[in-house]
Amino acid sequence: MSGKRPLVTVDAVVEQQDRILLVRRGREPFRGSWALPGGFVEYGERTEEAVAREVMEETGVAIELEGLLGVYSNPHRDPRGHVISICYVARGSGEPRGGSDAAEARFFPLEALEGMSLAFDHAGIIRDYKRYRDVL
Image (cartoon, rainbow, N blue to C red; front, top):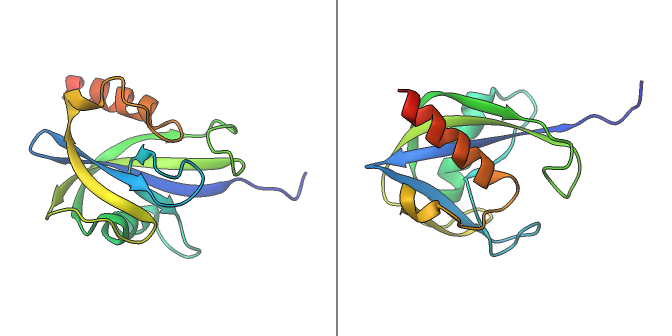
């Protein structure tokens, strides 16, 4: 077995009044691109805690988790290496502001995301979210 192991991140599709929270990345990779809020899970941290922490650090928005959207494990989804993301759906409260490594944070109407170029595989995650939402 190889000594290399994938890294684990969390992402969130944060809803507020039929709008979705995005951050403009302040760092590479994809600096300047819009993305879902999220980041790396710290050692000893539950993924549910990590996603709430990351969303708060990046946007100032508090979240209440609604469920698991999916696990995204394509080894090529992140140019930094093999990074697995566990993505949650959550409700957000508060006004977003850029923080941590996010240059900006803003809620967008779901329709505005159609065809929008997003970082990583986040456009595919948004497509999955639309299917998830249609099933509810």
